[in-house]
Every structure is written in C-alpha cells, then in structure tokens.
Length: 332
Ligand SMILES: [Zn+2]
Image 1 (tube, helix red, strand yellow):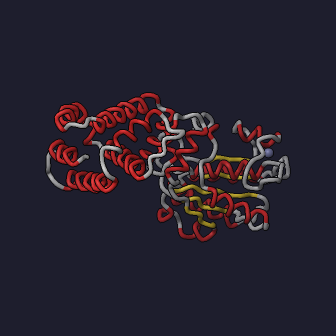
Image 2 (image 1 turned 90 degrees about the vertical axis):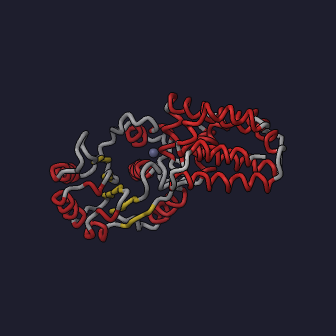
Image 3 (image 1 turned 135 degrees about the vertical axis):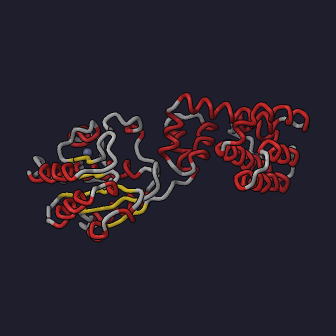
C-alpha cells in the first residue's frame, strides 16, 4: 500500500517534540526496542514511524532521528526496498492482522542484518492483530534481539493487549497546529490562501490536509464554496446576501462549510484589529475591505452567533436555511 503512497515525498509535518524525544533517547543509548505510536487517524503516525525507521538504518549519524537522504541506505529506504525495514499491515480487504503475518515477520527477523545496523518492523493498525497474532507478537517482543526496533501504530491503545503495552513505550501524537500545517503546505507550493483554508478544514490532521491538496476535484469543490462564501460576505446589502444564500444553501448545511465560514470570520476579525496591508495577497485585500465594514466587537459577535447557529442546527429541528439567514442578518 505504501510503495506508491502519494505523500511519500512530502516528508514529515510537525511532531518536532516527538522527534526530539526519540533523538535524545537514541543519543543516550536508551531508545526503546518497542514503541507504540498512538493518536487520531490522519495525523502522521505512519510518517513518523517511517522517518524513524529510515533514520535508524541511515549510516550518517549526524541527526539520529532524521535520515540524511544521501547515503546508500537512505536511497534504498526512500525507495521502500531497504531489507532491514519490514512493514506489517492488514492485507487488502482483511479486518485483522493474522498470526501468519506475525510468524512471517518473526522469520524475517531471524537472520541478522547484512549491514550490521538496525532492523525495524513497522506494524500498522497494531490493534487489529488477532488474539493469536497478538500473543505471537508478544513472544517476539519478549525475546532479546539486539538492534531491532518495533514500531506499533494504533488509533486505539485500549484495544491492544495489556501485556504488549507493558513491553512498549507509548508515545501519543496530537493533531498539529493550524499554522504548522499551513506553512508546510506553502513550502510545498500550495497557494497561500488555499493553504490557510485547507489547514483550517483539516483541523490538525495533516493526512486530511494532504488529501485535499492532492485531490483536484475535492479542492476545486472547496475552492468554489470558499469563493461563494467570500462573495456572500462581500455583499453589503441584506437583499443581495439573501439572494446569494439561496444558491449556496446546500453547502451551508455541511459542517465543512461552517468551519470555512468560521475561519473566514476569524481572518476578518484579525484584520479588523490590525489591518497590515504589506505582503498581503489578493484575497487578503478582499478580506480587508470586508473587515472595514464593522468594528472588531461586531465581528467577534458574528463568530459567536455562527457557533450558536451551527449548534442549534445540529441539536434541533430548525430549518438550516432559516437559521443561517438569521446569522447573515447579524453580519456588519
Ligand atoms: Zn542516510
């Protein structure tokens, strides 16, 4: 699955604290031989695991938790053909990782590394091991194996055997901050205003952000909604707004559109407090013009009102369009 992972070349986004932790442990010779990387889906657990695995087989020791990208080991791990990095994941349509897969892993670890370096086993969805598979893995973890590191990835540690957990060091990864994801996207050529929007929509999940950045169709749909929302905010008169909202009503009902409007209002609020016009993009100028229509307290109230409207729609039978019309009336 990961040989042709579309984001493989994009590198790691954030998780600096985790990398530093691993680096310090490695430098002190205290890197655990079994590590659980836990956290919500799409936040980069797998990428952290791959980065660490590649760093461990890299022969350049300058940055212990980062691959040098230059040595022969790095070239082969980048192409996913390094013999000392083994991946175990659920096979195609299966819900579980079978005991046979664990046995195969065990026998692959039996012969020593040709390069006398580290060997790393990455186990994705470690909570999907069958009972038998989990017990077989436990046995492997109990055997001392010198320079072998196991990286177990999971969204749910509670579904893993206690005995496995007790053999591992658990590192919990959190969603990244919006600005980290945003600048990551910008550095890789995503247009600044789109990066801001994508980062906001992704809510800390770099996987989701990359998915949007790579999926033309999805991004196009998001861009269109963004443009409609911006146009709506630009309509100064209530009549014009009301006319426009009829065309975008469907999107409004989706939670993502609400998140988008909320992000836009936060941008407007920020600009209404301090409108710095240097180095701003075309989109920023449009936002600045909108921001000038109201005082910052008014924009702040609009944000609270939007939250209330979103909550009301979720929890009551109110007509979404009606609720949003009320919200639009409140805009400066
Ligand atoms: Zn290297």
